[in-house]
Amino acid sequence: MSRARVPGPLAGRDFRLLYTSTVVSGLGDWLDQVALLVLVTTVWHGGAGDLALVVAASMLPLLATPFLAVLVDRRQSRRVLILTDLVQAGLTLGLVVAPGVYWAAGLVLVRSALGSVGGLAGQIQLRVSVPPGGVQAATVLLQTAMQSVKILGPALGGLLIVLMSPRAVFAANACTFLVGVIAAGALRTTSSPSRNTDLHYFKELREGFQHVFGSRLLRSLLFVMCSLMFVVFLYDSMAALIVPALGMGTSYIGYMVSAVGLGGVVGSLLMGRFAARLRPFLTMAGSVLAIGCIIVVIGFAIIQEIRIDSTIWLCVIFLLGIASAGILVTFPSVVHSETPVELTGRVWALMNSVPAVLNVLAPALAAALVVWIGLGSLLLVAGAALLLTAVVVAVRLGGVPHTDPSSGADDGAGRAEEPTPGPAPLNSGAPHRETRAPCVKRAGSSTEEITMADKIDKLAEAGFSLTDANDAQQAVLKSLTEDEVNVLLSVKSRVEAAGSDVEGHSVSDPSGGYLW
Image (cartoon, rainbow, N blue to C red; front, side):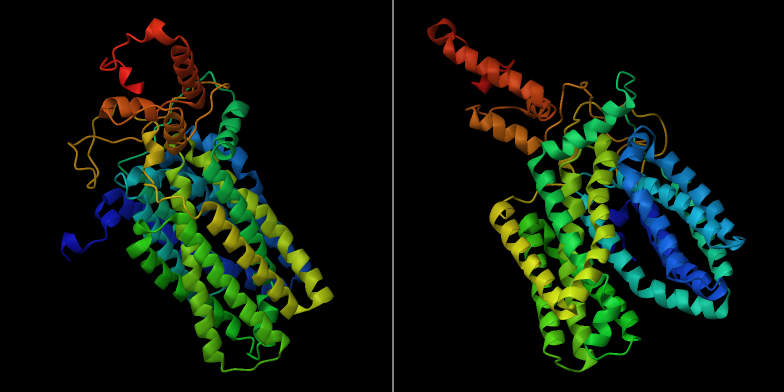
């Protein structure tokens, strides 16, 4: 295959390694999930309580990821990936000899925590493994691959269970983690966080919260995702009831999962083609609107006991998968565009863990609502909530323009560590040397990072003219903290108030006179 035909991010050696590791790991997770359910229910003859224990063990570590993220941001992403994959391989082998459900739950709990840490390191590694502006394209590729694995994984897991024992499947999954170790060890780029010893753990933790809640876009995105994921899990947790309520056999549950996955693949490919031209929140609103309409139709069909061919319902669910891609691709793109590399772990953990809390609560509420108002009415309520969310997002955030996912890293312009000699990644186009992620200066507890868009907006509203700034001066402006921007605005206000006393200041002064 000619190099020109290779999708952009895959032209880079490091991203190919990260991509391969992610896909293999995702496939192993599906195999593992099927094997664990079979082991608990068939081999150990566990009941609903045992299943709930194992599921809880896999979900609880998500709540701790914001607190673990500080430690991830302090380390090189490559080392974190190697360590977490290596230990997870050992824990997975432990499931091969686990004597009972309690041992298995303990191993799953620790492994899930390490998996969350590795996931954060993977997001950081993504930022430094692709060229500037390539994060969105890389996200699309990964999302397409994971949706493909969603189709293949359960089927392959079921086949391996027939041919092998569940414990043998765990051994196979352990090998997928070893693939991750080998891939991470071969990476030529890695994050290089600043080692600022002035900041305490809790101050670094607060930095992540301050960045999320100090950014209008990230605050809005977090609120939207919390609302959206809670509503989605209201009906998604009832999938086992929805399928027979539509007049289909229980075997169609698996077909539905595959239909959603196939739709996700198609949707991700479409997003890869058109996402760069679309406004992110308007795209998200359109996706939520389409999903809401589909859920309302399904709820209405259940209430009216409408029976149509199962193939038609599979096509409807396929469309649901296509629509979901607008959310699954837009979310990481916006998070990366608004986050400097150094804060990626903390911000990514917070943006994912808060909706995860609601995901735990939603199934219990859904079960109560089914008893109270019925399954069809639950879907109508969920669909109406999605439609309302779509309208709010479109009205309040639809005008937000597309931003380059590399802009978050630009906040640290001019602050990268000095590269050390070593081989260059194929996508760098640079001489043979190891490239490292740019470091964002941590100014201390009283200083808060704000996004580049917020900085430019603040300066423009105050009457600053930035059109005459050269590249170096623009880089300085992009690296300003919120406190520094406020000081600059205060100085301008005082200069203007001085009137004729300072009117002789030369506007052509290259040291900064262009600002006023």
